[in-house]
Image 1 (cartoon, chains in turn yellow, green):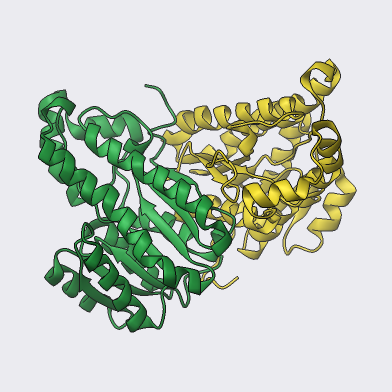
Image 2 (tube, each protein chain N blue to C red):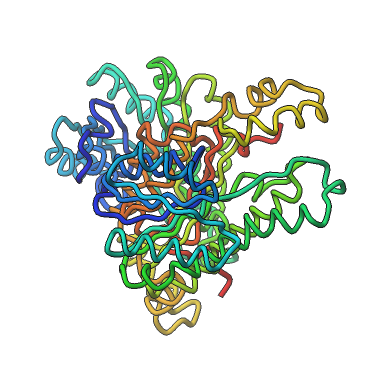
Length: 257
Length: 253
């Protein structure tokens, strides 16, 4: 970090799904820029292990599928810090299966975390952002919201829904100085991608998933690179950005071949 | 956040408006900037005001020769070049079928050919830099149908496609290419088009802006987006076009 002034000094932020991977990187980057971070995860213990490393941070367990828990998460942030400025509904899951062998339970698991969870986070965080005079919500969508690939139909549909929610929230909240933008990462080197590589190779007949990534997007992105964009969108530097969907994908979605 | 320390940039159309705001912010963040503009005295005056990190050169972006000289001058002044902002552009605001062939040619030459020539001229030093970054100024008109901006919109859509193809082809060189698509921003360009738009649409421009995007953006806000994309903080972003429009394009009505 080389900026002379901290970009998120004394801002209060909630990041869900922050015990590992992308969410953890966002929480770390926010803290490095001076924010007080509520590190939230369904795995409260793991969230605690992240929070203890970040100055001023607290951990709050939350299953984002449950309205009462999301409401309690926002209340915990306000109780601890007296306000809320930034919400990053990042928690997400993926189930890799063709649509025709996706069970309804799998579909609901993916859509309830990835889409219901984002709705609930916006629903309960927005009034606090409005009460504080404004703020920034950064949703974590995916390039699969723009163009999908086989085996992740439920995930992609939920992420497309996230982009849509982002736009509606942006328009409804802009009079209150609340900005809402989406990040659409390509394939990032996370557990989520690693865990599903083999399934893609087997079910799609791809000999080497990494080689496809190398050809299509150069390399895997890093969680820190996604976190950089989240910091930008959380900060005043992006004050004219609202309702936008920002792609960060090494070019995979902008080229056909 | 990684700032612009040590960046060596060429910005076209930098004598005023968005280009000048971009040059100013780059310098604030530690970059050296060559301000290129067809208005040589304007660019020189702006560079003077920005201090020792700024230089200027006359450049008509429709001339391959001028573009090559601007790149050469940047490399000579700063010992290399790693950042190119193709910002120079013009607007023509009138109903589509009132555009003359000359007007078509002029807007395509400056807004599209200028971007192509700029990227082509900068290729060698940007490859040598290893972390080269190109940011091309497109517009929300490049992704949406905007009445009265038909030819401008076509030119700005072309800028997005040029950026995407360049991004894919240049990926192995480490050069990233992205476009920025602002909504209505408070610049002389927008001031010029207000009377035309009001006369044809019959609604005060300020009311139009208030409903659709609440307020005009500022050149400094656009500059922030350009600076982010030009910096190593955006190291995985290429082939993208980043809107910034206060919500203008998010809603239907």
